[in-house]
Length: 203
Image (cartoon, rainbow, N blue to C red; front, side):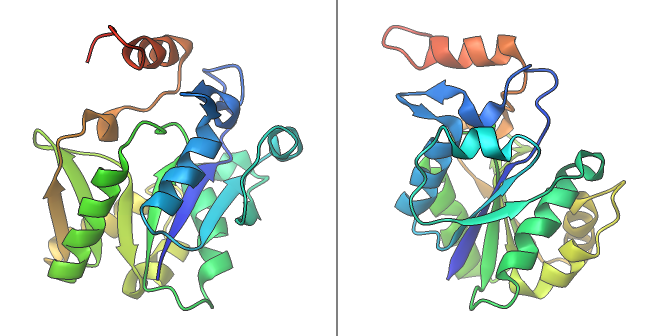
């Protein structure tokens, strides 16, 4: 099995509102990601929530998920990754896809291509690439789970990616999906996403 760890614990300071609860195509960002993870065959889906957990859980319908908490925002994204990873460490999971909640518009096909790359190449880290630039979500195989759990806060998951690249165990998968590069973390970025998601909007 390949699991999803959806990172939704950020403070959303620049947005001024929990990003997990922003709406995109009739769903919240978080509902969109959980649905997309299921459509891509990821199981289980772990949702890492933070200080806004109660507000978020009262506002969404997520179905069967595993909930994790990161109530220490100073630990940043790697703190959330570690909390999510700890919930699946003893489960029969061969790999995990780390998916930030502010990328609800990444296509299911992109995730499928990342998985296909992992199946064919047996890499430890698989990264989607659009026009030569790496983005998210990123797949990590079980052999680097402990590395993620021990990653330094200042470098985070980048330390694991860098080490695996140096060891020749990183695979880049080209995708036709610019969303992998787009973090929707400001009101302006959100308005741009909404404009592009309606008929007649820019591609």
